[in-house]
Length: 356
Ligand code: FES
Ligand SMILES: [Fe+2]
Image (cartoon, rainbow, N blue to C red; front, top):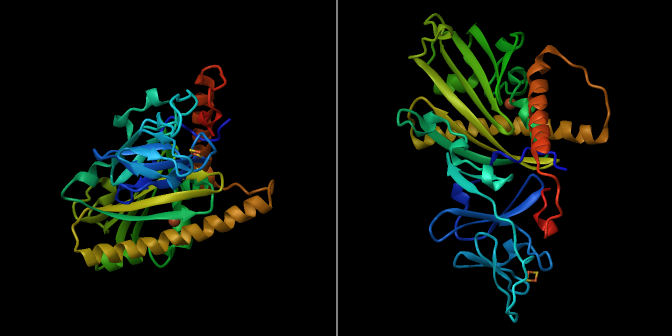
């Protein structure tokens, strides 16, 4: 039984980090070995040799095949065993599972579910990322010792910004402003506007606001592990809340979350803004985001430690929890639907091929 949605494209690694060396990543509790083939696409296999279970990532890449580092079994990029040193016959169980991959927005995406359902047109995309009028800057792979849904909670929750990110993304002006949300198919939108208030520190640094601003936060959550925060500001009075946002600063902060296992996730973050800037400005902006996202990390890791220590502790539910509660229900429903749709269980030839 799995606790993850599997029939979905998950972000796994920055494309910039995957080359002609074997790399290992864990996702949904499974270890995956990744490498770029001679043709340039990314191959992904279970990172386990079916002979004695040595991680294949400890082996060698020979052309597009991996030679295991223990006794030399060799697997092609589809996971088929093509060589057993000292033995002619290749038993059918000598195989490893391979996974569909696709690259977009600077990331390698992987499909952990039924391969026949993997449709690359469904890989997440933000059109502004490719728009020359906008500029995209890749951030980090932030490792967080918390379940990925705790990070998703945080990314359906604009209210925390007024308390956690006072030096970067928030200020006290938004403390009492209620949050609204709306559920759509596979998506959840959470938002609020803060009208006629001082600009947040980030926009005081990178914007050119003389007076008060109208500020928006739209948190777009795409189940199960993608969140894109559209936030921006415009001078108060120009009509930004009514849609007149020609003269504004707008940023999409993208969080592409890898669910590593039950207690760990990785936030691959990047930002896309509606203006061009030099390298130093981009780096300074990334530094501000790095501070903010590490503030979230500290909070989520501390909560995770308490959740494990205080299992069953009763929580208080507030109006601001409406969106995170919907988000979790949405993910539960997707997992249930996959279980219901699954074919009757049959014993796989090789237990390594079983889902986590
Ligand atoms: S463990 Fe891989 S060949 Fe023996
Ligand atoms: Fe945050």
